[in-house]
Image (cartoon, rainbow, N blue to C red; front, side, top):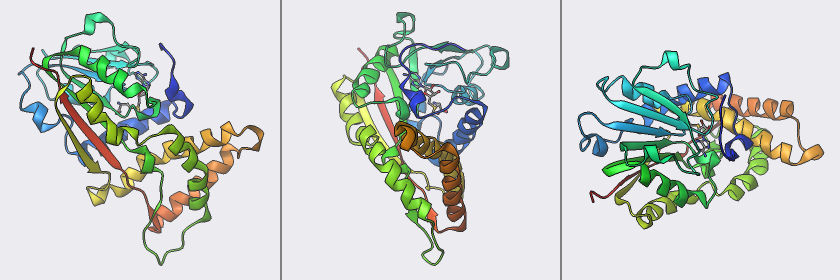
Length: 288
Ligand SMILES: C[S@@+](CC[C@H](N)C(=O)[O-])C[C@H]1O[C@@H](n2cnc3c(N)ncnc32)[C@H](O)[C@@H]1O
């Protein structure tokens, strides 16, 4: 396994076989919920054989899916700060290449001005307030003139809040306990910062045609349970991280797992549910 740079992401998130499985099912959920892999605006103005980069590619699932819909002569490059979740190279089509690189440090110059499309999805757990302009500028360097950046992030600022469902079904005290434990840490991480600021940042960095669309995770009501399934593990890991930071006073992993199980039960019964907003930003490099 290779990695580079300071890896803020591992404070909250795992890289193991269960996470690989979660990311791949989350991909299917996001594809249906957002309604596209590449926004129709990008698709309608791309060359016939685009070169596409996926930043923070994880299991490379987005590129594997995209590659199956483009001619084999198209070239795809995936980048991640860690190769831990990369599939074996032998399992990838020959037009997908994976690299290890830190989006915050910037990519080597050989990748500059190479891409018609740069995609980023769900890097949020690694992002601090100061990182958004830095990553925006680093992505601009990768684009050809007229190339598009598509950047998709969940608003984690509200994703861990249980909403009341059927008022006649009893809820669990674990719901309030989780909110009390996680709430301050979520606010401290400023996970909603980008929702109001990223479009302005992109404009200030020199992008053109900046647009910002918001999709609800329950846009397709039949996928509400699938949405909770994709969020349950990060919810649990986030709570575990908060307890670990308290040292000896913190609750054990076993306790957190038990309480999350109780929340899952009342969610399944319909007493509570979870939803959040997914933000889709598009921005274009000028033609000059
Ligand atoms: C939640 S996963 C999302 C994976 C993929 N984009 C997807 O949507 O399935 C976040 C990924 O960001 C990667 N990551 C974290 N910090 C990074 C950084 N500074 N530069 C590049 N990748 C990073 C992690 O290693 C992880 O694979």
